[in-house]
Length: 69
Figure 1: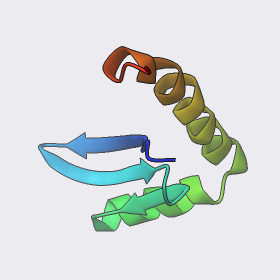
Figure 2: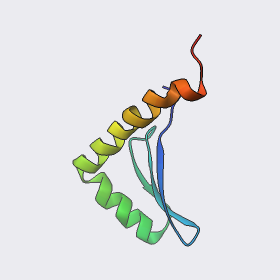
Figure 3: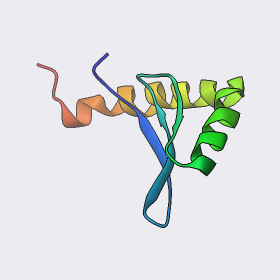
Figure 4: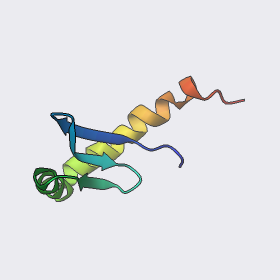
């Protein structure tokens, strides 16, 4: 539960929007980013794929960084 998956989109060193697995949705940081986040939040397949990426990427690789005793 302590693992967080963040997928950010940048343009010209400015963060436009990101997916935050703790929130379970996209968050926009610019006018364009807010529109993109709204579009992605209304598309269940995009949200589902990002949630699946947390499990596929983060949870399978946690043993690399944190050794379980």
